[in-house]
Length: 67
Image (cartoon, rainbow, N blue to C red; front, side, top):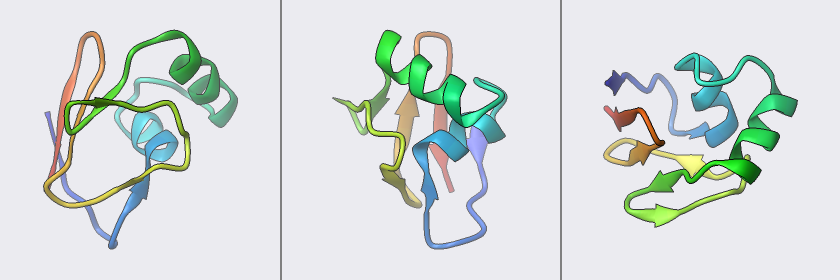
């Protein structure tokens, strides 16, 4: 999946909501605590991690390329 970034960055929890992985900030927090999420190949569990153009976010079922 490709995600078109409109600003300089998007926070990881906002990206997960925008891509319909989760539906709320609380759910994003729980999701990050219980699932492996990789940002550019490294495990990430901070909701506020800034995601920028060129980053790749991967979950169990989804790969998101940021454009």
